[in-house]
Amino acid sequence: MTPTAAIQPVTSKERIDVIDITRGFALLGILLVNMETFRRPVYAYMSGLNQPAGLDKLAAWLIAFFAEGKFFSLFSFLFGLGLYLLMERVEGRGGRFVPLYLRRMAVLLGFGLLHGFLLWCGDILLPYAILGVLLLLFRKRSPRGLLTWTVVFLALSILIQGGLLGLTEVGRAFSGPGAMEAMFEESRQQAIAATNQAIQVYTQGSLAEIFNQRIADELFMLPFNFFIAPNIFAMFLLGLYFGKRQIFRDIPQYLPLFRRLLVIGLVVGVTGNLIYVIAGEGASPSNPSLNSLISWAGQAVGAPMLSLAYLSAIVLLTQREAWKRRLSPLGAVGRMALSNYILQTLICTTIFYNYGLGLYNRVGEAVGLLLTFAIFLAQIPLSRWWLKRFRFGPLEWLWRSLTYGSWQPMRLKAESSSE
Image (cartoon, rainbow, N blue to C red; front, side, top):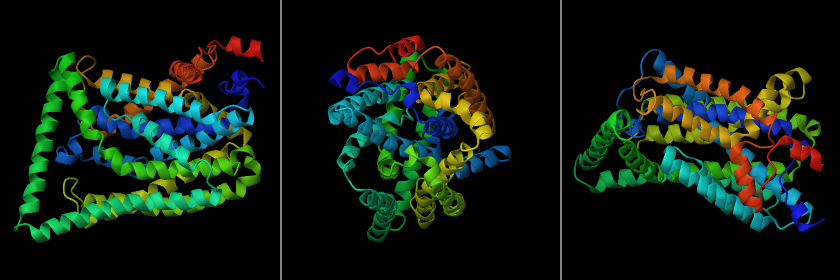
Protein backbone atom coordinates (compact mmCIF):
# COMPACT_ATOMS: atom_id res chain seq x y z
CA MET A 1 0.00 0.00 0.00
CA THR A 2 1.53 3.31 -1.06
CA PRO A 3 1.27 6.36 1.24
CA THR A 4 -0.94 8.10 -1.32
CA ALA A 5 -3.34 5.17 -1.52
CA ALA A 6 -3.47 5.00 2.27
CA ILE A 7 -4.98 8.45 2.65
CA GLN A 8 -7.51 8.73 -0.14
CA PRO A 9 -11.09 9.90 0.69
CA VAL A 10 -13.72 7.30 1.42
CA THR A 11 -15.49 5.94 -1.65
CA SER A 12 -19.26 5.62 -2.00
CA LYS A 13 -18.96 1.84 -1.55
CA GLU A 14 -17.29 2.32 1.85
CA ARG A 15 -19.97 4.62 3.26
CA ILE A 16 -22.36 3.47 5.99
CA ASP A 17 -25.85 4.44 4.83
CA VAL A 18 -27.46 4.84 8.24
CA ILE A 19 -24.81 7.39 9.24
CA ASP A 20 -25.53 9.51 6.17
CA ILE A 21 -29.28 9.25 6.80
CA THR A 22 -28.83 10.31 10.43
CA ARG A 23 -26.60 13.22 9.39
CA GLY A 24 -29.25 14.39 6.93
CA PHE A 25 -31.92 14.21 9.62
CA ALA A 26 -29.67 16.19 11.95
CA LEU A 27 -29.36 18.95 9.35
CA LEU A 28 -33.13 19.38 9.39
CA GLY A 29 -33.11 19.85 13.15
CA ILE A 30 -30.16 22.24 13.01
CA LEU A 31 -32.05 24.43 10.57
CA LEU A 32 -35.11 24.33 12.83
CA VAL A 33 -33.06 25.85 15.64
CA ASN A 34 -30.93 28.17 13.50
CA MET A 35 -34.01 29.74 11.92
CA GLU A 36 -34.48 31.73 15.13
CA THR A 37 -31.18 33.56 14.60
CA PHE A 38 -31.65 33.90 10.87
CA ARG A 39 -34.97 35.70 11.20
CA ARG A 40 -34.23 38.06 14.12
CA PRO A 41 -31.26 39.45 16.10
CA VAL A 42 -29.12 37.24 18.31
CA TYR A 43 -29.67 39.75 21.11
CA ALA A 44 -33.47 39.39 21.07
CA TYR A 45 -33.41 36.40 23.43
CA MET A 46 -31.48 38.36 26.06
CA SER A 47 -33.65 41.46 25.64
CA GLY A 48 -36.92 39.65 26.21
CA LEU A 49 -38.56 41.59 23.37
CA ASN A 50 -41.33 40.24 21.15
CA GLN A 51 -42.36 37.23 23.20
CA PRO A 52 -44.34 34.80 21.00
CA ALA A 53 -48.08 34.26 21.36
CA GLY A 54 -50.67 31.99 19.79
CA LEU A 55 -49.32 29.76 17.01
CA ASP A 56 -45.89 31.32 17.36
CA LYS A 57 -45.73 30.31 21.01
CA LEU A 58 -46.78 26.76 20.14
CA ALA A 59 -44.13 26.61 17.41
CA ALA A 60 -41.49 27.98 19.82
CA TRP A 61 -42.45 25.35 22.42
CA LEU A 62 -42.25 22.51 19.88
CA ILE A 63 -38.84 23.67 18.65
CA ALA A 64 -37.54 24.01 22.22
CA PHE A 65 -38.83 20.59 23.23
CA PHE A 66 -37.97 18.53 20.15
CA ALA A 67 -35.03 20.39 18.57
CA GLU A 68 -33.02 22.77 20.79
CA GLY A 69 -29.83 21.03 21.88
CA LYS A 70 -30.86 17.69 20.38
CA PHE A 71 -29.53 18.06 16.88
CA PHE A 72 -26.15 19.59 17.60
CA SER A 73 -25.86 16.70 20.10
CA LEU A 74 -26.67 14.24 17.33
CA PHE A 75 -24.30 15.95 14.91
CA SER A 76 -21.58 15.99 17.57
CA PHE A 77 -22.04 12.26 18.12
CA LEU A 78 -21.56 11.67 14.38
CA PHE A 79 -18.46 13.88 14.44
CA GLY A 80 -16.82 11.73 17.12
CA LEU A 81 -17.85 8.56 15.30
CA GLY A 82 -16.39 10.00 12.10
CA LEU A 83 -13.02 10.57 13.78
CA TYR A 84 -12.79 6.90 14.67
CA LEU A 85 -13.86 5.68 11.23
CA LEU A 86 -11.29 7.93 9.57
CA MET A 87 -8.57 6.84 12.00
CA GLU A 88 -9.43 3.18 11.48
CA ARG A 89 -9.30 3.52 7.70
CA VAL A 90 -6.08 5.55 7.49
CA GLU A 91 -4.10 3.57 10.08
CA GLY A 92 -5.44 0.29 8.68
CA ARG A 93 -3.83 1.22 5.36
CA GLY A 94 -0.53 2.24 6.90
CA GLY A 95 -1.10 5.99 6.71
CA ARG A 96 -0.34 8.66 9.33
CA PHE A 97 -3.62 9.72 10.89
CA VAL A 98 -2.71 12.67 13.14
CA PRO A 99 -1.17 14.97 10.47
CA LEU A 100 -4.06 14.24 8.12
CA TYR A 101 -6.64 14.90 10.82
CA LEU A 102 -4.97 18.15 11.90
CA ARG A 103 -5.07 19.39 8.29
CA ARG A 104 -8.73 18.40 8.19
CA MET A 105 -9.46 20.43 11.33
CA ALA A 106 -7.42 23.38 10.03
CA VAL A 107 -9.55 23.50 6.88
CA LEU A 108 -12.72 23.20 8.96
CA LEU A 109 -11.47 26.08 11.12
CA GLY A 110 -11.07 28.17 7.97
CA PHE A 111 -14.61 27.33 6.86
CA GLY A 112 -15.88 28.29 10.31
CA LEU A 113 -14.11 31.66 10.34
CA LEU A 114 -15.37 32.52 6.86
CA HIS A 115 -18.89 31.35 7.62
CA GLY A 116 -19.14 33.11 10.98
CA PHE A 117 -17.67 36.46 9.98
CA LEU A 118 -18.72 36.72 6.33
CA LEU A 119 -22.13 35.03 6.22
CA TRP A 120 -23.85 34.45 9.58
CA CYS A 121 -23.02 34.62 13.28
CA GLY A 122 -24.53 31.28 14.37
CA ASP A 123 -21.65 29.20 13.01
CA ILE A 124 -20.89 25.87 14.71
CA LEU A 125 -17.91 24.86 12.55
CA LEU A 126 -15.41 26.98 14.48
CA PRO A 127 -16.01 25.31 17.90
CA TYR A 128 -16.16 21.92 16.18
CA ALA A 129 -12.71 22.46 14.67
CA ILE A 130 -11.18 23.56 17.98
CA LEU A 131 -12.81 20.81 20.05
CA GLY A 132 -12.03 18.32 17.29
CA VAL A 133 -8.31 18.90 17.88
CA LEU A 134 -8.77 18.32 21.63
CA LEU A 135 -10.56 15.06 20.81
CA LEU A 136 -7.24 13.66 19.57
CA LEU A 137 -6.16 13.45 23.21
CA PHE A 138 -8.87 10.85 23.83
CA ARG A 139 -8.47 8.71 20.72
CA LYS A 140 -6.52 5.97 22.55
CA ARG A 141 -8.83 5.82 25.59
CA SER A 142 -10.63 2.57 26.31
CA PRO A 143 -14.39 2.40 25.67
CA ARG A 144 -15.00 2.40 29.43
CA GLY A 145 -12.80 5.47 29.86
CA LEU A 146 -14.67 7.29 27.07
CA LEU A 147 -18.00 6.63 28.78
CA THR A 148 -16.64 7.96 32.06
CA TRP A 149 -15.40 11.15 30.40
CA THR A 150 -18.73 11.55 28.60
CA VAL A 151 -20.50 11.70 31.97
CA VAL A 152 -17.84 14.07 33.34
CA PHE A 153 -18.31 16.58 30.53
CA LEU A 154 -22.11 16.43 30.71
CA ALA A 155 -21.86 17.13 34.45
CA LEU A 156 -19.35 19.93 33.79
CA SER A 157 -21.95 21.77 31.74
CA ILE A 158 -24.33 21.81 34.72
CA LEU A 159 -21.53 22.74 37.14
CA ILE A 160 -20.62 25.79 35.04
CA GLN A 161 -24.19 27.04 35.20
CA GLY A 162 -24.35 26.27 38.91
CA GLY A 163 -21.13 28.22 39.41
CA LEU A 164 -22.60 31.24 37.62
CA LEU A 165 -25.66 31.11 39.84
CA GLY A 166 -23.43 30.80 42.90
CA LEU A 167 -21.39 33.84 41.87
CA THR A 168 -24.61 35.76 41.31
CA GLU A 169 -25.86 34.92 44.79
CA VAL A 170 -22.51 35.90 46.32
CA GLY A 171 -22.76 39.18 44.45
CA ARG A 172 -26.24 39.77 45.83
CA ALA A 173 -25.03 39.06 49.35
CA PHE A 174 -22.09 41.46 49.24
CA SER A 175 -23.48 44.25 47.06
CA GLY A 176 -26.01 46.84 48.09
CA PRO A 177 -29.78 46.20 47.92
CA GLY A 178 -30.87 45.82 44.32
CA ALA A 179 -27.35 46.34 42.93
CA MET A 180 -27.25 43.00 41.06
CA GLU A 181 -30.76 43.52 39.71
CA ALA A 182 -29.74 46.95 38.48
CA MET A 183 -26.74 45.43 36.72
CA PHE A 184 -28.88 42.76 35.07
CA GLU A 185 -31.41 45.40 33.99
CA GLU A 186 -28.60 47.44 32.48
CA SER A 187 -27.48 44.37 30.53
CA ARG A 188 -31.04 43.87 29.33
CA GLN A 189 -31.27 47.47 28.16
CA GLN A 190 -28.01 47.03 26.28
CA ALA A 191 -29.47 43.93 24.62
CA ILE A 192 -32.56 45.93 23.65
CA ALA A 193 -30.38 48.64 22.09
CA ALA A 194 -28.30 46.01 20.26
CA THR A 195 -31.49 44.33 19.03
CA ASN A 196 -32.87 47.57 17.61
CA GLN A 197 -29.56 48.39 15.94
CA ALA A 198 -29.34 44.95 14.32
CA ILE A 199 -32.91 45.28 13.01
CA GLN A 200 -32.08 48.67 11.50
CA VAL A 201 -28.89 47.40 9.83
CA TYR A 202 -30.24 44.15 8.42
CA THR A 203 -33.41 45.82 7.10
CA GLN A 204 -31.96 49.10 5.83
CA GLY A 205 -28.16 49.02 6.00
CA SER A 206 -25.60 48.87 3.23
CA LEU A 207 -23.51 45.76 2.54
CA ALA A 208 -20.63 47.34 4.46
CA GLU A 209 -22.88 48.06 7.45
CA ILE A 210 -24.25 44.51 7.34
CA PHE A 211 -20.68 43.17 7.27
CA ASN A 212 -19.72 45.23 10.33
CA GLN A 213 -22.90 44.17 12.14
CA ARG A 214 -22.18 40.53 11.42
CA ILE A 215 -18.71 40.85 12.94
CA ALA A 216 -20.24 42.37 16.08
CA ASP A 217 -22.83 39.58 16.20
CA GLU A 218 -20.19 36.86 15.81
CA LEU A 219 -18.02 38.34 18.57
CA PHE A 220 -21.10 38.48 20.80
CA MET A 221 -21.90 34.82 20.09
CA LEU A 222 -18.40 33.37 20.52
CA PRO A 223 -18.46 33.33 24.36
CA PHE A 224 -21.68 31.32 24.31
CA ASN A 225 -19.73 28.44 22.76
CA PHE A 226 -18.05 28.14 26.17
CA PHE A 227 -21.35 27.06 27.70
CA ILE A 228 -22.25 24.46 25.09
CA ALA A 229 -18.68 23.17 24.56
CA PRO A 230 -18.91 20.52 27.33
CA ASN A 231 -22.10 19.10 25.78
CA ILE A 232 -20.53 19.05 22.32
CA PHE A 233 -17.39 17.37 23.58
CA ALA A 234 -19.35 14.81 25.61
CA MET A 235 -21.15 13.71 22.44
CA PHE A 236 -17.84 13.67 20.54
CA LEU A 237 -16.61 11.17 23.11
CA LEU A 238 -19.78 9.09 22.94
CA GLY A 239 -19.48 8.87 19.15
CA LEU A 240 -15.85 7.80 19.56
CA TYR A 241 -17.02 5.17 22.05
CA PHE A 242 -19.49 3.75 19.51
CA GLY A 243 -16.71 3.67 16.94
CA LYS A 244 -14.32 1.77 19.21
CA ARG A 245 -17.08 -0.73 19.97
CA GLN A 246 -17.53 -1.26 16.18
CA ILE A 247 -21.27 -0.87 16.70
CA PHE A 248 -21.97 0.56 13.25
CA ARG A 249 -19.88 -2.14 11.57
CA ASP A 250 -22.30 -4.84 12.72
CA ILE A 251 -25.64 -3.19 13.44
CA PRO A 252 -27.74 -6.41 13.51
CA GLN A 253 -25.65 -7.66 16.44
CA TYR A 254 -26.37 -4.47 18.39
CA LEU A 255 -30.10 -4.11 17.71
CA PRO A 256 -30.94 -4.97 21.37
CA LEU A 257 -28.69 -2.06 22.42
CA PHE A 258 -30.50 0.35 20.11
CA ARG A 259 -33.88 -0.86 21.39
CA ARG A 260 -32.78 -0.16 24.98
CA LEU A 261 -31.38 3.23 23.96
CA LEU A 262 -34.67 4.11 22.28
CA VAL A 263 -36.69 3.40 25.42
CA ILE A 264 -34.23 4.96 27.87
CA GLY A 265 -33.63 7.92 25.57
CA LEU A 266 -37.34 8.62 25.28
CA VAL A 267 -38.04 8.31 29.02
CA VAL A 268 -35.08 10.41 30.17
CA GLY A 269 -35.16 12.72 27.16
CA VAL A 270 -38.85 13.57 27.39
CA THR A 271 -38.59 14.09 31.16
CA GLY A 272 -35.49 16.27 30.86
CA ASN A 273 -36.91 18.39 28.09
CA LEU A 274 -40.20 18.90 29.90
CA ILE A 275 -38.12 20.25 32.79
CA TYR A 276 -36.19 22.41 30.31
CA VAL A 277 -39.23 24.10 28.76
CA ILE A 278 -41.36 24.36 31.92
CA ALA A 279 -38.59 25.73 34.15
CA GLY A 280 -37.45 27.94 31.29
CA GLU A 281 -40.83 29.67 31.24
CA GLY A 282 -40.10 31.13 34.65
CA ALA A 283 -36.48 32.06 33.95
CA SER A 284 -35.11 35.39 32.76
CA PRO A 285 -32.33 34.99 30.16
CA SER A 286 -30.50 38.03 31.51
CA ASN A 287 -30.74 37.09 35.22
CA PRO A 288 -29.30 33.74 36.48
CA SER A 289 -31.73 32.02 38.84
CA LEU A 290 -32.62 28.63 40.25
CA ASN A 291 -35.20 28.24 37.49
CA SER A 292 -32.58 28.88 34.80
CA LEU A 293 -30.23 26.33 36.42
CA ILE A 294 -32.99 23.70 36.59
CA SER A 295 -33.92 24.42 32.98
CA TRP A 296 -30.30 24.12 31.85
CA ALA A 297 -29.82 20.86 33.79
CA GLY A 298 -32.95 19.43 32.20
CA GLN A 299 -31.62 20.16 28.74
CA ALA A 300 -28.04 19.12 29.53
CA VAL A 301 -29.31 15.61 30.33
CA GLY A 302 -32.49 15.49 28.26
CA ALA A 303 -31.09 16.75 24.94
CA PRO A 304 -28.35 14.10 24.54
CA MET A 305 -30.73 11.34 25.61
CA LEU A 306 -33.45 12.42 23.19
CA SER A 307 -30.84 12.68 20.43
CA LEU A 308 -29.86 9.06 21.16
CA ALA A 309 -33.53 8.11 20.91
CA TYR A 310 -33.66 9.78 17.48
CA LEU A 311 -30.51 7.91 16.44
CA SER A 312 -31.86 4.59 17.67
CA ALA A 313 -35.20 5.08 15.92
CA ILE A 314 -33.41 5.72 12.61
CA VAL A 315 -31.15 2.69 13.05
CA LEU A 316 -34.10 0.42 13.87
CA LEU A 317 -36.23 1.74 11.02
CA THR A 318 -33.47 1.29 8.45
CA GLN A 319 -33.32 -2.42 9.28
CA ARG A 320 -36.62 -2.67 7.41
CA GLU A 321 -36.17 -2.41 3.66
CA ALA A 322 -39.31 -0.35 3.11
CA TRP A 323 -38.27 2.24 5.71
CA LYS A 324 -34.71 2.29 4.45
CA ARG A 325 -36.05 3.28 1.00
CA ARG A 326 -38.24 5.98 2.54
CA LEU A 327 -35.39 7.44 4.56
CA SER A 328 -32.68 7.09 1.92
CA PRO A 329 -33.27 10.61 0.47
CA LEU A 330 -31.98 11.96 3.79
CA GLY A 331 -28.74 10.16 3.07
CA ALA A 332 -28.08 12.35 0.04
CA VAL A 333 -28.47 15.46 2.21
CA GLY A 334 -26.17 13.91 4.81
CA ARG A 335 -23.45 13.09 2.29
CA MET A 336 -23.36 16.80 1.44
CA ALA A 337 -23.74 17.99 5.02
CA LEU A 338 -21.20 20.84 4.89
CA SER A 339 -22.47 22.15 1.54
CA ASN A 340 -26.08 21.95 2.68
CA TYR A 341 -25.28 23.63 6.01
CA ILE A 342 -23.70 26.60 4.23
CA LEU A 343 -26.47 26.58 1.60
CA GLN A 344 -29.04 26.95 4.38
CA THR A 345 -27.21 30.09 5.48
CA LEU A 346 -27.13 31.51 1.94
CA ILE A 347 -30.83 30.83 1.42
CA CYS A 348 -31.95 32.19 4.79
CA THR A 349 -29.85 35.36 4.73
CA THR A 350 -31.21 36.04 1.24
CA ILE A 351 -34.76 35.56 2.50
CA PHE A 352 -34.36 37.79 5.55
CA TYR A 353 -31.75 40.47 4.81
CA ASN A 354 -32.51 43.62 2.86
CA TYR A 355 -30.44 42.57 -0.18
CA GLY A 356 -32.96 39.73 -0.62
CA LEU A 357 -36.63 39.53 0.35
CA GLY A 358 -36.18 41.75 3.41
CA LEU A 359 -38.25 39.66 5.84
CA TYR A 360 -35.90 40.21 8.79
CA ASN A 361 -37.80 40.54 12.09
CA ARG A 362 -41.08 40.39 10.17
CA VAL A 363 -42.01 36.72 10.59
CA GLY A 364 -42.67 34.69 13.73
CA GLU A 365 -41.82 31.19 14.87
CA ALA A 366 -44.70 29.53 13.00
CA VAL A 367 -43.71 30.97 9.62
CA GLY A 368 -40.08 30.17 10.42
CA LEU A 369 -41.11 26.56 11.00
CA LEU A 370 -42.81 26.40 7.59
CA LEU A 371 -39.79 27.99 5.92
CA THR A 372 -37.52 25.41 7.55
CA PHE A 373 -39.40 22.47 6.07
CA ALA A 374 -39.73 24.18 2.67
CA ILE A 375 -35.97 24.81 2.46
CA PHE A 376 -35.05 21.32 3.64
CA LEU A 377 -37.50 19.65 1.28
CA ALA A 378 -35.88 21.57 -1.58
CA GLN A 379 -32.43 20.39 -0.49
CA ILE A 380 -33.39 16.72 -0.80
CA PRO A 381 -33.92 16.60 -4.61
CA LEU A 382 -31.07 19.07 -5.13
CA SER A 383 -28.69 16.80 -3.20
CA ARG A 384 -29.85 13.69 -5.04
CA TRP A 385 -29.46 15.43 -8.40
CA TRP A 386 -25.93 16.57 -7.51
CA LEU A 387 -24.76 13.17 -6.23
CA LYS A 388 -25.93 11.43 -9.39
CA ARG A 389 -23.24 13.44 -11.18
CA PHE A 390 -20.51 14.10 -8.61
CA ARG A 391 -18.66 12.18 -5.91
CA PHE A 392 -18.94 14.94 -3.29
CA GLY A 393 -20.80 18.11 -2.54
CA PRO A 394 -18.84 21.19 -3.70
CA LEU A 395 -17.56 22.13 -0.24
CA GLU A 396 -16.88 18.50 0.66
CA TRP A 397 -14.74 18.31 -2.49
CA LEU A 398 -12.80 21.42 -1.46
CA TRP A 399 -12.44 20.17 2.12
CA ARG A 400 -11.08 16.81 0.99
CA SER A 401 -8.81 18.31 -1.64
CA LEU A 402 -7.20 20.68 0.87
CA THR A 403 -6.98 17.92 3.49
CA TYR A 404 -5.37 15.33 1.23
CA GLY A 405 -3.14 17.84 -0.54
CA SER A 406 -4.33 17.11 -4.07
CA TRP A 407 -7.37 17.95 -6.16
CA GLN A 408 -9.79 15.06 -5.86
CA PRO A 409 -11.66 13.71 -8.90
CA MET A 410 -15.08 15.31 -8.79
CA ARG A 411 -17.22 13.68 -11.44
CA LEU A 412 -18.75 10.35 -10.54
CA LYS A 413 -17.33 8.60 -13.61
CA ALA A 414 -13.80 9.33 -12.35
CA GLU A 415 -14.43 7.18 -9.28
CA SER A 416 -15.98 4.29 -11.20
CA SER A 417 -13.17 4.22 -13.72
CA SER A 418 -10.52 4.09 -10.98
CA GLU A 419 -11.99 1.20 -9.01
